[in-house]
Length: 414
Image (cartoon, rainbow, N blue to C red; front, top):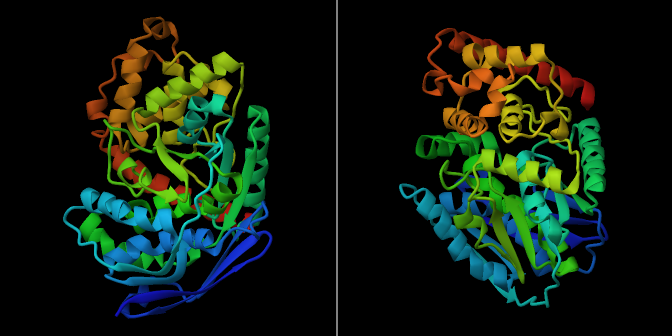
């Protein structure tokens, strides 16, 4: 029988450590460790164990459902416990050909009901999606929440420190408070083995398809309790029109309850070009200059300004009549010529529809066609963007160069 038992949850002033044991064949999907820690920059010593345990359960739930396993926990927040069936239904609807079974065995469901304040929060990485959410809810003065250990391994301390400084500075420029959570949660599951297991079924990696949504959200449970938050926003990655199966989805996230705190999967009605417009209008309204962090290389703080995602973001804002320099990009005329060559002849475009959205936005601003930097965007056929045969050779070479540069950077940043 596949089981995981939370033996103890040890809470100190700034940290929560989970001690657990695993039985059954599914143990192969876990790393050798049997404890992990989450560190907060707020005092969590008085947070009830039933609230603290939310994250442990949420981090394991999808794998337990896939492996018909039982999660055993002594106590858990009542509201979260009651929300689990709806969360599970979200996964089942998203992956109808996959069997989701398993069980959550809770000895004591604790009612932690509190009177919510009007304070809200938003998960914040400095990316376009997250910034669009902040811009949309700026008048609510959200508390920004960043989780370290999600996209960048905690062993790369120099990079983590640099990202923290960047986000602290960005929050200061926005006049918003920010709290940081450092978490070892991605050291629990052997993601390579879990991915190998689900890929024939879901055609995706485990982190993206199953884990990251509720695993990220649940980190905020102690903060929600301490601050008595009304709502926490998590930015959408996809939209109603450009949808793809993903562990962070409104059919899942919107059903998560952290005691009285509601979760909203925000911006799902917006495509990426719309989110750029929201940010552009925010910049104009509040006279702000911000520095987005969007690069395909997660281990960078400064955008490379030469990858497909950087180029896409630059043209997103240009199409909305916003100078890309106002969001942290500074390209010369030569760089824009290189961007054209790269998009047309070099990089493989995974989502041509996103570039077609940009093209439509440009066509709504015919005056920009006079600008030689953007003129090519008006008539280029993005249906054929990946038909240039040499792109496949560039793709192989680009991937190799990216891996080499990333490895070199990580060696120097430990």
